[in-house]
Each structure stands twice: as structure tokens, then as C-alpha cells.
Image 1 (cartoon, rainbow, N blue to C red):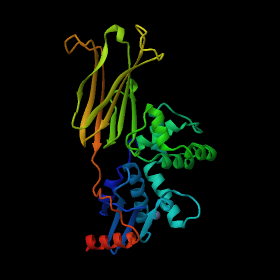
Image 2: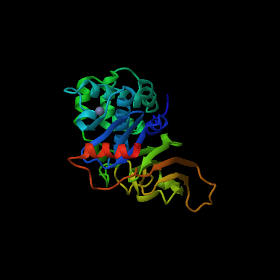
Image 3: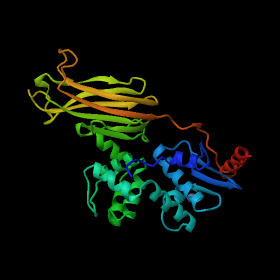
Image 4: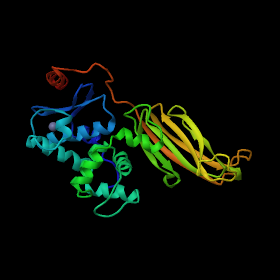
Length: 313
Ligand SMILES: [Zn+2]
């Protein structure tokens, strides 16, 4: 098992109605009416959270539970829960993060072993690769026995926003956005990003040789170049011949598939004289439907169920 689980496709293949609506403080809901079942997901959440909520609701379906309307407590918190909720939580964790997939993904990050000492940045990167939230990844690493319980508690105290800000040295413009850090070791990567995500390319460069990284193919309808700078290794930009990092900062501005291709070459030489290349492909997801800011409030649960009945009728 090497790829993230396509939970939305799994749900649709199971012929369960799947829809996205603004749900205020509700994460998602599951309903069943005779032969027809439906799952509603909060359209205002980031896709990593929506994936986990969807797996939780799908868990209610697979486990044969009756209708459930789930807030943060019921999706994420352990303890003090009904057995059905604990079961749906465990199902979601195992479904999106089975141990084989976690192990495989950790190996691609150069991490092996049984008991790991992972820092918050590594857990964040793992969560990105698996398409789940940071908190869900911490919980599952503890459940798989990869992390001691105390390490999980420590990691859970770190906010994802702090981690993301530390990664690239810049606070993401949108606090829900994910931050992707790519270096040469990740040449050939495929990224599944979403709108407003931030992508930082860090490529080694020695300007005194004349060879610099030049973007040769960057889909402008998908990616906007926000910043392009050279960070010298010793922090002193005046040292001739200093190695450093070319830092290109892109933001995802449109949905679609495209690529980021750069070549390392002397700008005055003809194309084809490059001594290096870097390429990543990008699949940027559109926002899921229903971006209406008006959430359903006190009657949200009943409203969602009524809507489901109308759709299912
Ligand atoms: Zn639930």
C-alpha cells in the first residue's frame, strides 16, 4: 500500500450520497434511510480534515450505526465517548493510516524503526503525505505504537500554524493552508495540493559560477510566484562564491494539473545548456462545493437530515 486512500471515491463507489455544506461547528454527519445512506461534510474545512471526517462517517456506515452528527469532540477526542464514536474514530485512523502505509511513507522520508523520536516538522510532513490533519497523524502514530503516549501529548501541544511558520520562515497567508518544502532530493515529486497552499523550493546554488536556477515551465494559472531570493549559507550575501539556497516561493492560485520545472543554467547561454533540472508535478484541487459563509446553527442537525431526505427521496 503506497498511496493515500481516496476516501471520497470509496464513499461514492459504495453508493453513499456524499455532499459538502457549511455546517458551523459540526464536522460531518451520517444518515441512513432504508437502503439509502448519506454523508455530509463541512465544506468550510480544509481537505485534510474533510478526509478524516469522511472516513469517520464512513466508519459509522460500515459498522452499521444509526444516524450520527459529529462535532470536533466526537471526531477527535478519546475518552468519555460512546462506544460507537470510539469505534468510528478508530476506523477512520486505520482506514486512512494503516500501518503499512505509515511505514512506507516514513521510509520515503528516510525514517525507519519501531519506536521513533519524531519532531513536529516530521509529523507535519507525514500528515501532508497521507492527506490527514496533523492531530490525526499524531493520534495514529501513538495508536500504531510508533510514538510513546507522552511524545504524542507533547506533539499535540504544538499548533500546526506554528510548525508551518517555522518550516519556511514565513507565516502562511491563510492559516488553513498547507506549506510544502521541496529540495533537490524531491525531484520528480507529485504533490496533491489545494488552493492557497504555499510551496517553497529550496535549491542549492553557487551564483559565482554563473549557474543559477531558472523557472522554465510553471503553470501561471495554477501557481503564482510570490518571492524569489537567494539565501546564502552563512547569512552573508556579499561573500563571493558562497554556496547558498535559491528560495522560490509559490502560492496555489487556481485548480488544475501542472508542473514546476526549473533548469540550472547560465542565463546568457542558449536553452539546452542546462547542467541540472528540477521538476515536480502538481495536482491542485478546487475548493469543494458550498462555500457559503452562513453556517447552519441550532437546527443544523435537523436541517441536514431534512436536506438528506429531500436528496434521497
Ligand atoms: Zn461519529
